[in-house]
Length: 226
Length: 411
Image (cartoon, rainbow over all chains, first blue to last red; front, side):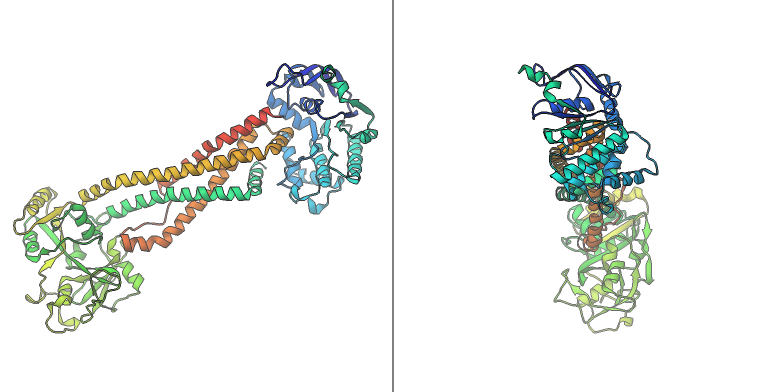
């Protein structure tokens, strides 16, 4: 399994009696592309942070790509995340004051992979794949359009050849045309590389890009009790 | 990439970073400046006179006597009789003596009337004799020897005609223009008040003050003697003594201080210099304290600026964490940013200090007798710079730890 959650509970230390997340059992197969939908406040961010190792479960078993994240140290989780998980957000995906190439290099650097002479060429080829003009490669991110930024964010997320890609409402700030371009590029690349994709959005019109659709309320049962 | 990220991050916050750099540069300028001037003044003062066992003047405080006789600062209380000078210097324990007569000036530079023994016996630094870069000591009454700085600033060379003025003002209305002097010698630079001094013979001083009854041309009056009574000084300002033995110093000093015909004061230059520095130590400590406080306030400003930036950069920190940056990386990133600000400030502060010293050097020498070098990299200052860098790391530890904790905790 790419993801396997068993009896996972999570509560913030400030209010330990309130379960923000309660997942009895939930799993995703390798290479599967899952669309997760649900309104705000259903524990979406908490679930994604648990899967990326930014948070650790209060109790339960969090297995990602065959590794128990709940048994790893913080440093091991950081390294695991850098090496195996790509992340795309709704906004602020990139450091705004450095250029596209440096943003991608930065993500590469945290993976612990040795820098190789062909790295910059690899980054440039990735940027070309996502139709980022050569003239924009060295411009600070803050000077690029949101659509360009989101496409660079995919390139950044893919540089370490992740096995799992988490996309958290990445199309929310895009117009119709940019959204369609983004989705096509993302889905085709993920399919071609066999990457497991978790795509979270409240926009149900995107569901047709995915083979599996899960409601957040079905995964996180703590909300059902309320 | 790490340094690049820190640099670009600072460039992205130009406004606040620039203000912080300015505040820190000013504090580093003050800190290094105070230390440098303190150190250089001490060295300069200590090397001004050497090999002189006693300085004798009219009854006054030892510091006052030291300041006007050696540093050409302040004014003498009164003169001493020529007769007293001759009696004291004829003491068998006195190896040599240099009479000094002050009171005239030339275009803001003090004129010192003396004898040719001045060029023979006066030492500065580590017992270094005065040397001539060109010319020779005075031979005739209206010969004149220039200090290196005077010659340089006024553009005088050998053979130039110089008119002395009565008093010490830069612009005097009482010129001794009936008897112009001729430059016959220019001294090599010494880094002491000698460089700022115009030297003439005692006979010359006497001549321009009405000793001569009829006009003479310069070559008429060789310095064989005092031309009878005509050019013999009635009084001088002070005199320096070299003794035959160091052991005799205290005895001769006591004799001079108890001299019955006239109230005289004899001082040991080394002791007077120590007294001067002892007096200055309170000012020294106060200046050091003030510059330290200025630095602390600048460092606190840096810390506050970095702290505010952490708040602004929450999303950036989160993003870095998501792409795999460990909390310690963020700690080091903030520390590096602070260190870069500190290094730039040190550079700006040091360069500004260097340029300021370059500009103020001549003024300090002319007006205060302080010969300050422009090389600010003394051992103490290098230690100070290392301490500033260390203090920066400590001051930045608060925002760095905050970034560390936030990134460990936040989702």
